[in-house]
Image (tube, rainbow, N blue to C red):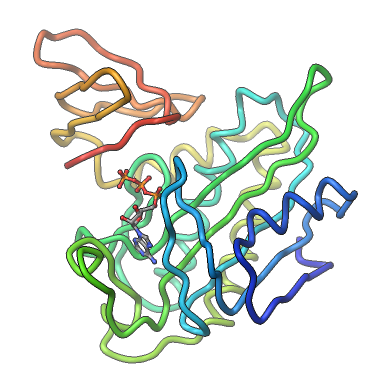
Length: 244
Ligand code: ATP
């Protein structure tokens, strides 16, 4: 990973840029990194605030040999790598919030957005975007309540390059496990780092809400929730939001 790096002082969205480059044949492992995203994206068309020079705003182009239905495993792999790298390189305690966020003291410090191009022959490419708030001093408006940065958590600026390197080393290791058919190892780490398991959750989808205890995740990244009536619901990460 990272043999080829596309670096931008500013771009609309590293995921959009990466998808374009992947469509033009960019190699597996290429990185797209920007100092600033002017139209950073979250899931479902939401905005990811990415001000200049304070964060790691990056996308990785992958050409995995897994089936399209297994793609959520890539998000889980990215989340484990990000949480580990943050812990190792900054000492900040963070947890994974299913399916795609990293939290510090209940506030979002990083998010992952995985997008895929696939056809009848399987996956063409996957773009895994990751945004890590490293040195943001504050957040505007309602984001104040839900977002934080590693600088805010530690009380001092953190080294973006060191965290980025830590993430890439970890991600490459775990990604190799994934490709070697050892997803179980990643899943074990994921479970240890997740802050939702064993806790009450409310999962809100387009036309359903499930409340109950989050029991586990399965091999497809689906969350298993025991609802009030005792039934275990299996919730795919698609278009749902999880509230604690
Ligand atoms: P939900 O919180 O409903 O599960 P999500 O966590 O999947 O959604 P994403 O789509 O991953 O959310 O991220 C977009 C949301 O994250 C935005 O709607 C906004 O609330 C919040 N957000 C935007 N920029 C940042 C940032 N730099 N750091 C933390 N949170 C942000």
